[in-house]
Amino acid sequence: MPKRAIYLLIFLFLLGVEIAIATYLKTGFIRAYLGDLLVVILLYCLLMSTLKPSVKTGLILTLAIAFAIELLQLVNLTKFFPQEYKQLATLVLGSHFSWLDLLMYVLGIVVAGITELVLQKRYSFPST
Image 1 (cartoon, rainbow, N blue to C red):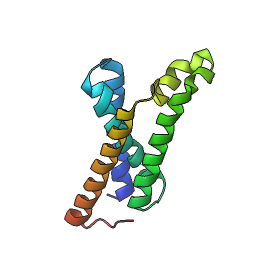
Image 2: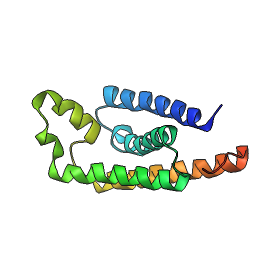
Image 3: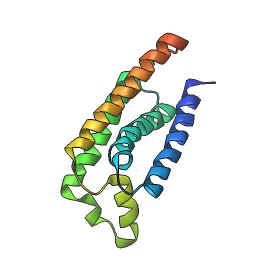
């Protein structure tokens, strides 16, 4: 199976997990922190399945996007969306800034990076 297809399958699986978290969990550790960790891995897999960056570039780009979205929460970006899109915008972009979210994004990137290293060594995947 091509490596890009594996990224796509992982993305789809994590998308399902994130939808389940958003739908069924309204509070708690999983919703508040684990979801943030998983979302950067989800974003990384999406980037790696659609673009052809190196692993290092993919990790850095993913972290930059996650940080940018979190920093946009400081200006309450969702207030600029029309009412009919506000709920979706809040779900995708979040509703409030948190330093802990930034930490979880970094931890998610670390998990993705370590996973890449392990898979490259174990299965001889190219580092692309």
